[in-house]
Amino acid sequence: MSDAVEFLEVYRDFICWRSREFADFYGCVVSQTPDGYVKLVFDVGGFEVSQETASDLGLCLAEEVATSYLADGFDIYPPPPREEAVFKRGAWGGVTSNVSVRNGSHEFFSSGSGETLIRVNGIKERGFEIVFEHMCFSFSREDALWLSEKLLAVCGRAPAFPFG
Image 1 (spheres, rainbow, N blue to C red):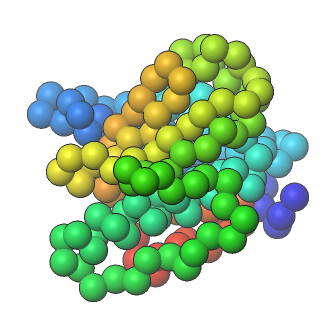
Image 2 (image 1 turned 90 degrees about the horizontal axis):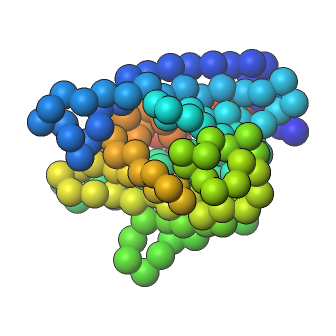
């Protein structure tokens, strides 16, 4: 286990990017469990993953955000390449991985614990989504950056970007 911040728990209202014209929001919570896992909750449920998986997910989100900013003409440097990456970049863009989850909500996964596929991609008009077995959550670029920073913070790591 790394030098994670003990029992950090943060909350933010995310805009549902695919329904933003209806001002549809849902809550997102990132926290650390007493045994060092990272808990991620979106609206109706959540799941826990290892710090390694959570940290890599945070870096993947940072890469996706950097790609979005670069496409908009911003002069920024993407985060350094991930070593021993849990999530792999697909030929179509985005990242995907079979990861080990525990205490997963049945709204997200068939089984509450075990290996499952999680995918992160950019979507139209600077949005992002995280896709689970049974559910998908879309959110804004600002929400993606926030989630990246909080996943890294709960793992005791610095943000991937010097701005926020």
